[in-house]
Amino acid sequence: MSKPKTISCIGAGYVGGPTMAVMAQKNPDIQFHVVDINEERINAWNSDELPVYEPGLKEIVEETRGRNMHYSTDVQGAIKAADMIFISVNTPTKLYGKGKGRAADLKFVEKCAREIARHAEGDKIVVEKSTLPVRTADSIKRILTANSNGQKFRVLSNPEFLAEGTAIKDLLEPDRVLIGGDQDEAGRQAIDALSAVYEAWLPKERILKTNVWSSELSKLTANAFLAQRISSINSISALCEATGADVNEVAKAIGTDSRIGPKFLNASVGFGGSCFQKDILNLVYLCEYFGLDEVARYWEQVVIMNNHQKSRFANKITTTLFNTVSDKKIAFLGWAFKKDTNDTRESPAIYVADQLMSDQARISVYDPKVDPRQMIRDLDMLGTRPPEENLQNLSAAPDPYEACRDAHAVAILTEWDEFRNLDWQRIYDGMQKPAFVFDGRMILDQEALKEIGFEVFTIGYGK
Image (cartoon, rainbow, N blue to C red; front, side, top):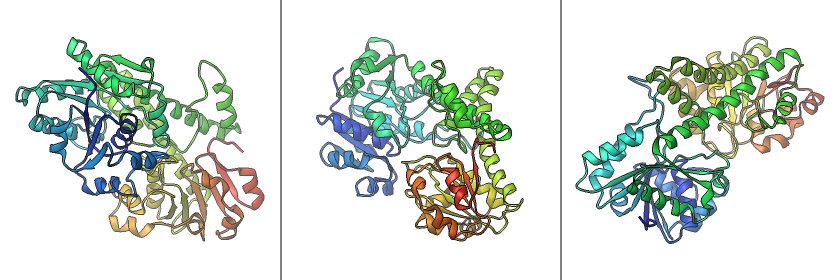
């Protein structure tokens, strides 16, 4: 099976958009179609204001758009035209029925499979790009086969290992690319066809070829291991605060051990994003399904620890502000779950704000990339209070100084680089006194802040 001439991707989100852009840049001989039923999102991809913020993405889109990259809502046409079809739709945690709160909701994936079977003309390679539970490829294949009109479908698993904020770098220089498929002759040919797309810019030794089940499980396992490290160091941050230790020094000490290494040992207010919590909960559900209850409880504790860290941070703000935040203004610097992205999914800021607002705090937020409407949508999704109360008690500011003006406290929720170099004397002068800073990302010079007059709390630092 030769290198495809036309590739379509169903889903124009944080994975599909950047992935196809880089593929199009590196494969000018292939026509790419990114399609989505969300017309507003497609219009944004065709504009100067992309719906996804990633450093370097806009330049690649501008280079490829109209040349060999096309964005539209024509899902049917994209299916018909493609030799290879990527499924890159949302797979959120189920909020209903069996597996509620743990299992992945695959209704969008199944809908894609049925659309592909309905409109496909000729044989197709179908690639799972969404994060999916083990054996989803088999379900996709069964749906495609049962509804085909004589076509042959080859289903591959090609999980993404992107970190938001560095997605373009991760795509251009990945540690590895994983392609899983059937191990018969036709399956290996399909794997080789997708491998040829990546070989346009990557050496073959970075492309790992496995069976489809190993590929699917590897994605969940990788995210679970990374999240486990974050929850582990966050658990130690609480002990550091209680004992007078410095979590940065502890992390450096253990990170120099070659058996452990330094990555993902930065304590914080908690991890967020679209994958870590969802994938761990999915792993928990799989373990429960197969009767591995002890294994399920082990991985569930990673999520429990992450939730505890967010709650602990909010509690620290309340107790420090004389055990009440009622009608007090708390400035949030950052709402995205990490810097260099506008993604807010599972952002710690959402849950810290929600807890403080339940104690009647007024939250003022500055984030350089997140739309204020998204902040309100994030809170509304929790269903803690009527939407009008969220609108009343959370506001977005045009700059960090306005967010902090007349505030009783400032909380750092996202590690945006610009927050390191703010005029903190100006911020102090405009705040209520005593003025408090709660650094949930360990990015500020707490001694310099104390000299100005702030009372400072830093995650993982014991006084």
